Amino acid sequence: MKSCASARDTIAFESGPWRDSTRDLNSAGQPLVHATNFMSDKFFVDTNMLVYAHDRAAGVKHKRARSLIESLWDSGGGVLSTQVLQELCVNLRRKTARPLSLEQTRRLLQDYLSWDIVINTADSVIEALANEHRYNILFWDALIIQAAGTSGATVVYSEDLADGQTDGPLRVVNPLNRSSSG
Image 1 (cartoon, rainbow, N blue to C red):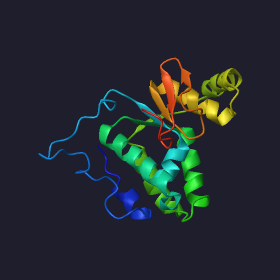
Image 2: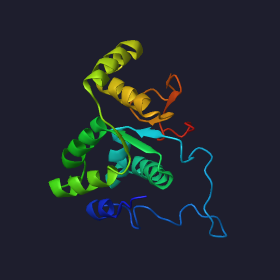
Image 3: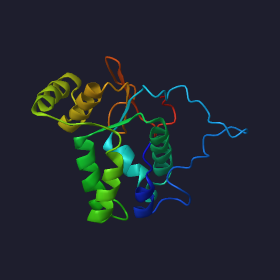
Image 4: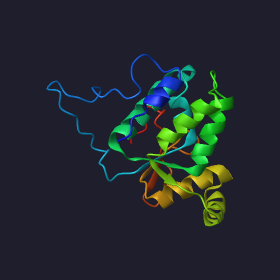
């Protein structure tokens, strides 16, 4: 699994490494097993979760999103799309308390290229239009649902979509909402 060390160096994270390898060890120093994070499980991450994970000024949202992203780095189950990478690039450079430089952003995105990446196509756009109509949601959110479905993910982590919404085997979970389970 690729380390996120360059991301740690470019962003004002809390003290400590981006991925704490001892975080999920039991008292005997053995890895804890997480029931929902099998290597075959895929979890699609919406842009807002990544932005919060990399923006310490987001407070509690930062802590929860960072924990989620660390877990996905550890499990290897994280999935993104080209749309998410594009939105992340813009948001980290323009909409956070401490915007990143072009080079910092490039290095961070390079780290995430080790995750599964769904490449949106012209057909993706057409399918997203159907999702927009079916769920009465914004087009960009519909494109997230479409990409997650294409990836084979079982969960979409998002703050923007309706917590608990389902589309076949796909379920939306807002990890920033304490009552969510996922």
